[in-house]
Image 1 (cartoon, rainbow, N blue to C red):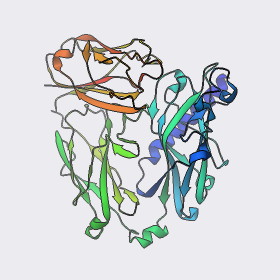
Image 2: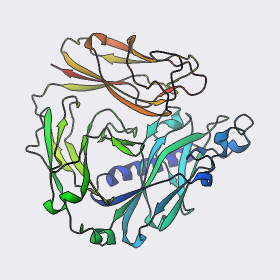
Image 3: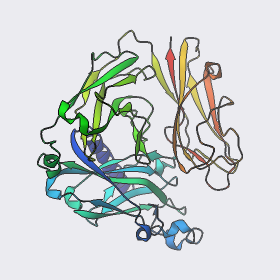
Image 4: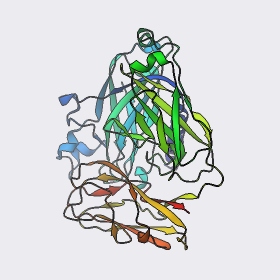
Length: 420
């Protein structure tokens, strides 16, 4: 059993490594989302259950047990014109303990979904970008069959909220010829690679194409809160929420598509940062620029540090009046702190009747909604400096719902402090 688990972990690590390399490539792609196919997937949602749930004595009669874990994605491209393919998801990691999450496209091959903490009983939400073999796809409707294993007698279950196939184009792809984009290139430029607290990012591209651009989306690679839940704090930041891009540097919709990047609360870095842009054309084609690397902060910049909780325990999930607590150690002298921010991500199933479900040192901070939408909620909130304590700081989570509550997603609450 240990050898099997080690093999699974190795496969996951290789997939994550592939993902990191793939995510830095440039070029043209289209993104095709799974659409609701009604009775095809039984539950009208892409819920995934373990093999035994259908006849489980406690859960087998629930409506969720009818979900067949099937998603359909239509890819109209001729696969001979496709350079590579990726599966992208907005994925709730599921019931703590669920493991061996996997997907089989068109019955042609099994891909392990990267493990980011669910198997160790943590609450997770992440955005895997998984390279697929192009020959495992088909032109037309693709069937993605998801599955998983259950943790002992419990119920194995997870939920890809959104699913997409990214199709990267070869230079001879007919859509590039039809749209006049063959040979197109663009690059990110800055006035300097030494970054102040506010940086203007610019884009060099052929002027004749500006009327064909819908938007330019800007992304940065740097050390910060792990907003994508992939266990990498030094990574490309930004993700999608219901298919819309959020928490990236920003989006520009008018020429020349420059944007101001506020870096004031980005932590002090141990390696150079990078920036890239994704140019979204009105015909749906997206061009990802090469990364502009080698960006650094000046040596005399004030120190900005990221602090994480030292004991985010498994199942950091409050419901039925169960109080959850985590602690964080800050420096003994906070007199030099000039600014602070709280960063969290939760899966919001509702707080019930609790007015302030989350508190830091007994002070309330609104990290969830008032409606419990059963969706991930990311927050980046300013912190009153008087609420910070030297040494031990305590975070509490409390919901009195009987069903779903509020799940604190890994990596848990984090603070960013900027010093004078």
